[in-house]
Length: 90
Image 1 (cartoon, helix red, strand yellow):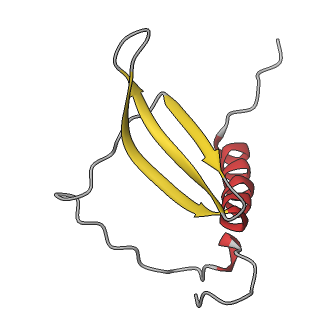
Image 2: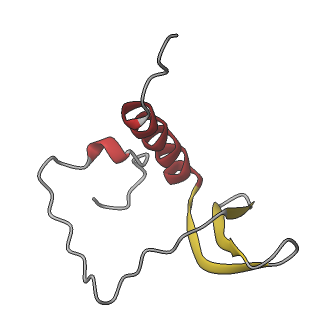
């Protein structure tokens, strides 16, 4: 996708796109904390793990435009709604 004045929309990704992952180079980093900062131009997620009750270790930093963050929020919400089991009525 070209970076033009077009708004970011994660739903524009064509179906069947192949994503290559070098499993020996890319780790899954567990997080139990995310610290968020932003300015007029974008947003940064400082993804962290708890070391103890008072200390956090940042394991990754992810930056993106505000438009991309809004699209991520929308896609994440839809994904959670699809994958969260409905409550069982008793």
